[in-house]
Length: 352
Ligand code: M6R
Image (tube, rainbow, N blue to C red):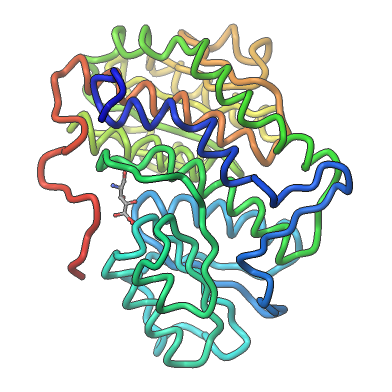
């Protein structure tokens, strides 16, 4: 059941500390400062990596590809429905990773079958043991989020992010003590975001907006896309996410005093540029909601600040996303939407 929550989605948002703990269990060795994933014990890979995924899982995959590239591994990300082995350079050297919560998404399955046909090594990053993707692939890494009932992916996205952080360490062989400690602290930090969030006030203030925009740079760019997808899916309102730098190349024309802009501002070297983008939307009178680990940097520019604790820069987007989940949830709740089963959508999309 819903354990006293009004919706499965809210329950699942609140289950995130536990979901992340399970994803980390026996994979992170704090004493030795190492990460090992038994699921991938027999995986040998030194070639390029291609991710295939849809929807929220695609946003997680974008983050996974960033992490690998940052660690020196060529990595690309494809929408599974656009992945065509005849027009994309994929070979026996390629590691193809299907990111799919359900392990049943038709587009992702078809991409993985194509990759197997040309002899690539395949990995399913999935939540469901024995799912079609797990069976199709040479390897399966489980995200261990537990069953997710709400159509909107919440805890499974957080678990995918964490699993991909582990995956990138395993593939690259790169890991630091600081990173291991940040992972250890992550579940408690997620709990503190849940306990202290003022997202409900933000929802109350902006439930009537014409549209919502989400901007972020670097690791927060995929979270901007995810924030917008969640908003569309459960509130039925127009929302779009952009890499912050893209705003001025077109979308800025849509910005008015009726379009709140959610800006992820992370103290990771990208803050100054993102603040530049925030000033651009402010000049058009758009309300600004900053999601940030450095309140002092944004205070004077933001109408609302949704704070997250300081962490390793790689993990900040995991915390930021939780604030965005809560804002979307509370807007959808105020609008009386069918939150767990949004119109026209299915939990698992089994047609191409
Ligand atoms: O089961 P999958 O991860 O393969 O599903 C992919 C998408 O259909 C899914 O993430 C969808 O975008 C979510 N409902 C979004 O909340």
